[in-house]
Length: 117
Image (cartoon, rainbow, N blue to C red; front, side, top):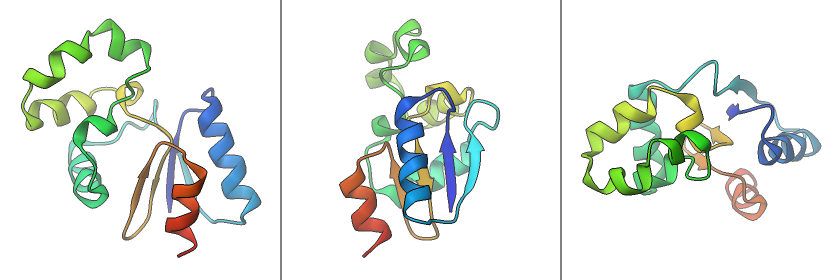
């Protein structure tokens, strides 16, 4: 599994601690330094079954500075993917990628139900 996170994010810290306590094996990937690529984002979006908007870090400063709340509804899906691929700080975190799942954001019950099904 691949765990995308931002070290200063408290939610990411909680998710990492949870994974470690459960004895889960994963590769950690710093989302700011190793931003997801356009192709990764497309694949993960398809795998997740979530609306693309769920991949945006809507509480982030960059999201707010770019006024994306107003702009996203007018953008095509391709434009949104391209924008997400420009900066890891635009991407919702933490994210856990497995062979057949993508978890976006940390909700313990959701992670539990997917990882221990």
